[in-house]
Length: 180
Image (cartoon, rainbow, N blue to C red):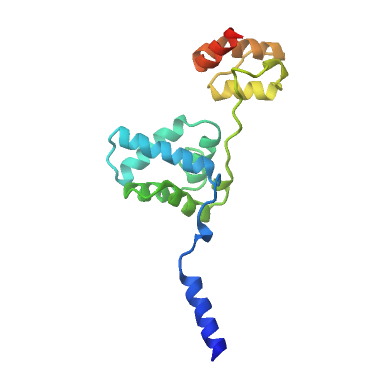
């Protein structure tokens, strides 16, 4: 009898919703941030919150996404080269104002890679010594700005291009560097 009541208690507890699936701090960083900004842009632009209009806006936003956000769009099928398509797992919940972190929890169950995406650490351009950065990091700065350095063969060429473009893409950092 005691064993039977213990088993029934375990069964009831396993059926209750718990925090086991809840996102931990820093988990699904790209998903939560990207969808948060996307949802806010929908509200700001007064887009009708139905699945079709949300999907159209998502495809448009993903077309302009770069880096990790583009990779997130690929995973949910919002890019032209994506193999899978789970965009409706985003558009449907957003249409009825579901919290972004809950959407990311559901996406995590579908594809773990979505929550493994993390943003790269940002370089503080106002204080960093560009000469001490690797060429790979200098290229990444230019890539984040949507620029390239055609004809750049040496590190000094990349540094010159970054300092040339800094007032356009990072004006506060450019001003701080001239104050040094």
